[in-house]
Image (tube, rainbow, N blue to C red; front, side):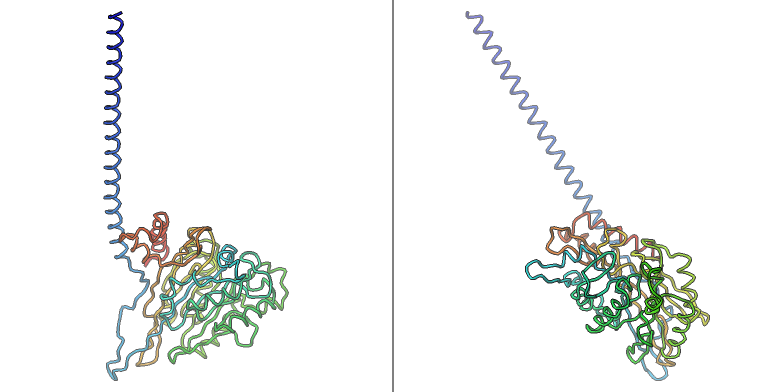
Length: 418
């Protein structure tokens, strides 16, 4: 019996020893794992901070300048009169998708509010003497729709106007979604709330001439065509500026006789393409040959190449084949990358001649905060937001969005170039 008790005590001690050893090994192992994890996180944080610091430095170096005069002779040495500087900004297509309609709608008041979508970037737009855009929506008494036959609430037009846009082209492939009646309603409403419009042929004069700082600037606008064009009547098609060389040449002749500088807004190109087609290049050359000084394209829902060409007189002519969209709910990373183009013109005090002085841009991005957010869609300053995140304010956007902003800035750099 004594031996049995001794065996039991020995077995018990052995089990306790094993359990203690196992516990110690497990504890040490766990501590090692924790230390490794902490060290890994610490190392990753250091690497992340180094990367963000490097990216912040790179963001500081990037200059969104496309063109600048080589000669900065602003003053006239003979009479000390200063040259006049005119600033024109431009954005691309202005769309109101179904998702934007849902985001702006208030169930309680049964009203729409779109102002929050633009509030972050109005300061970049209102700096200029005039700001151009292309309204790719209608404002009629039909049901609202962001796709197909496009029709938006009047509150959308008001929010766009409040954001700083002054003049809009209404010449797009959706201009005749509701026929001549819809085109007339749209034009009437837009002009009622303070927009200047161009692109239709409802009135006798199809060239919009604006006097900016005692300088007459002409604005022309054309579209490649309209949706379901074969089903439209001749009268409908004649109510809109569908591009035709004979028609454009006549308009440009009128503009040259009555204005000092000419902007042409073109709705053309292939959807989502970041390079212009041969047809776009051909039309651009035709417009330059016939007097255009600046050509601003849209429709592809993507930023395209920009270049400075020379006309027959050796003067610089700026061509932006596509400015992308100003705002939309298109769920495509390329289409979310936008910009505000800034064009500076200099009118010489000596002889009154107008020259292209400088072109740069502000990169903007259509941020989708998700369906559960208070405000789903908002335009943000790409570079400013990315710099703030890289500078340590990682709560401003998600890491995923930050990376998309970096990708977007790289895309702009690649597409636009210098």
